[in-house]
Length: 328
View 1 (tube, one colour):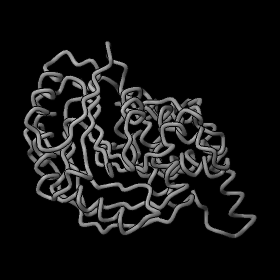
View 2: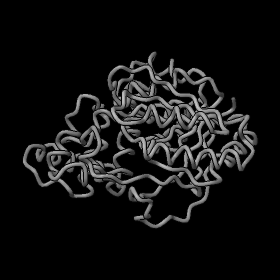
View 3: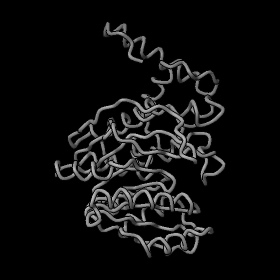
């Protein structure tokens, strides 16, 4: 099989059923039944997920594999790893059970994989929609970007693994790499993208969109806490095997494009403090992040005020010695 669409699922049988209907239509209409299948890992759902999938398998024109081995909910990370371990296709595409691909995305992905044998990762764009399918935002007008394997590809795409849906990855060795590197966090997809980008070319297919369902935080089984889960996110960079400077650049770049200290908690100061003192943030990363926060003037707390005072004086001294503008 060329491509397996991997759907880790828990208690969303109605959304999953709708997804199966759409995927079957896309695959059949594009004549891709011999190249694409769907693999579902049921994370011990207590709703009708098992019955819905088994019933759908009976009349489906596409291959649907149901993994129903879990006796209890093992969490998102473990389920995402389990379904990856069981996959056998050349490439895998992760898809949230309540997120939906656009009609031509699968065919476009396969075309790119055929055109570019060195391609190891394809990443779509996304926009939010309500559970009833209503679009809540505007689509950006973006062009696809192709990155050759290396640190630049890693830097510019790793943060995009935050949204798993539609993410296509070269499967071989990926599960083993995650375990061998000692990674363990709620965002394994960030590691998957970062690790793959260092070794294989990456395409950000920014003109293709995945419809990401926006639901209340209370209906998810995790919270962002007081650090926006940055400690989990940075665990991926900690174990990636890059240089200290590259790790720090990855950390600061993620926060530059994400800026979750503005939205992850009601207390921006507390979030910043917890990020800068987190165990998975490198010392050099703290310096780069602090420079960014100092530039944005978004910290008004007392706990880290002295650190920012010292940093500002260092940057001023640098300007006096070098004559170059302050780069905060």
